[in-house]
Amino acid sequence: MNKSRLSAAIAITSACAFLQAEDPKGWQSSAGVNVAVNKGNSDTLLAGANILTLRKWDKNEFTAGADAVYGSNRDIVTRQSVTTAQNYGAFLQYNRLVSDRIYFLGRGDARQDKVADINYRVTLSPGAGYYFIKKEKTQLSAEAGPGVVFEQFAHLPSSAYLTLRFGEKFSHAFNDKVRLLQQADVTPKIDEWSNYVFNTQATLEADLTAKLSTRLTLQDTYRSHPAPGRRENDLRILAGIAYKF
Image 1 (tube, rainbow, N blue to C red):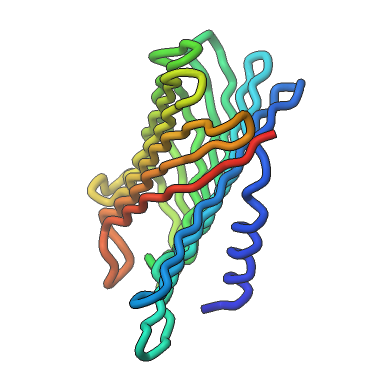
Image 2 (image 1 turned 90 degrees about the vertical axis):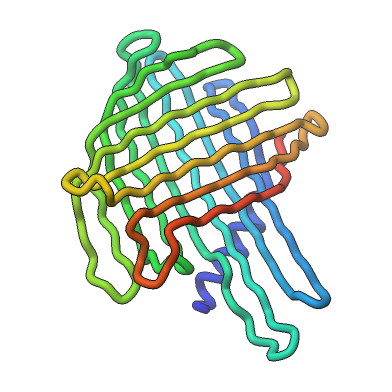
């Protein structure tokens, strides 16, 4: 494994347990970390971190975030380590409201997944969205638009192609302490609809104190045309904590 990438993953994991705050200008930021370690008959590590920031002002909405997951397993007999997860990603999105429910958007996503043999995948997409539900405790929106994908599988040439992006977002506050956040999108190749990537994520968050909360996150990525020798689906369930001040 590349030592610089391991160092970067450890740095991200260490740094991302620090804040969830809202400033007077409307910025809301959150960061969390999750770690699972097993020692004994198996020697495994799974660590993840994420950070998200959001601001809404006038008719503007801006969101950006990044995440990282690293996992390894060491054979107790041979003492050889195998990387079981190693992916990093980031996104940003800007919405411009043209009414209370309709908005135009610009979005960019970038991801690397070494275990899935994806050196990089970058998606740039403009589009439009609509809030079907826009209440204080519950929001549901859908988005659609064209896009372009730049990607490279390991040991293969890079490629670029046009796509369409369809997405949805849902959030609901059960009370002032428990929240559900969910989002999904699918990006089929515009001239080959059977070639697509589907991403979904759901997070259940519960406040323990005014500053500390727990999170349970399910992430799933399905790629209909994976890298040669790789499977289509990757599913993760992550439990962790977030600190806020």
